[in-house]
Image 1 (tube, rainbow, N blue to C red):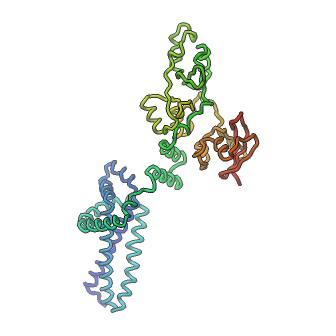
Image 2: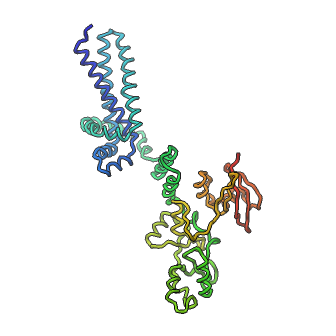
Image 3: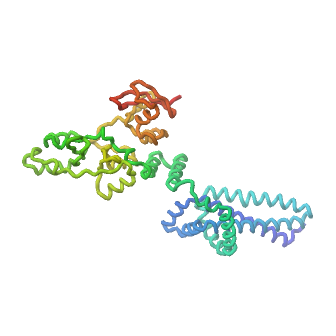
Length: 423
């Protein structure tokens, strides 16, 4: 049986329309799934097609209207041609055959296959289809503008336009989610995830969460003989020491070891010939509610590395250094003069021996836990908050899936805690 040229032309046209439908379906998925950040990076590197993709993404409403309009037109036209072809071949039952065949062809070859490929390679697909889509948008511009106006009017009348403008996730939380997702997939290592997360946390954390408490600050009485102050500083691992007068919380200056060494070198009488207060710098006080990002910027502007933290009444609460803020990003920074702090030590049985002063943030980061730090910033603070008492040595508490045993206490301070996971 000979097949007429008209049938061949019609079948070829249907095949061409299905190819166009597949391209449009894949384009829609690719431009929806592509990462604007990665495309922007390619644009900065000079990729011309990346610039086209950015332009398309900035007109997403018109783009989707053009794709959907074009896709529906070619699918309807292909189905109409197929119906006519099958009617001529099989009579009235051709409608059933046309419906079955076109459903399979459209779903498999014009929807599933191109969209699956686009999901697997969204950026590559978006770059390839950017040029043709620009042409399509220009051709269908009058119709898509009308459709956009009509759909926008309906959304405004129903009140859905306002709710569509509300983002449920802030931008920095979206970035954090992307980092966590890539970490789970193995593309981002734990250390990198912690550092990137630390940067995002700077705007949410305040100085009171990371400051060194006043009870742990090394300070010196400014009235001490200068040779005793020199000896104390030489025995200290710190380069900056607060000086006080009359009472430890009345800080009158900060003594820098480098300034002290310079004064010693220029003093013919050695340490006894130095006026300690003359070489001390004025103290810098900052409120405890200052965020870490604000304080980091303040450090950079003042070219300073050290500040004293006070509460709303001006009382000394602690101190913070630039190193403390940087450690929130990169983790602990130790040098050759730092003393071992024994803040966290692993036992052979899998339990942890931790200092009560260990921050919950550091513990969570090290162990991958999610202990809450809203009400307390340290391990000791969490135990007291949960137990509602100041515990004695040997007491055991269980919460958040962990067992806490008090191993050391000094007056009202919890010094050492053993932590093990509940089984």
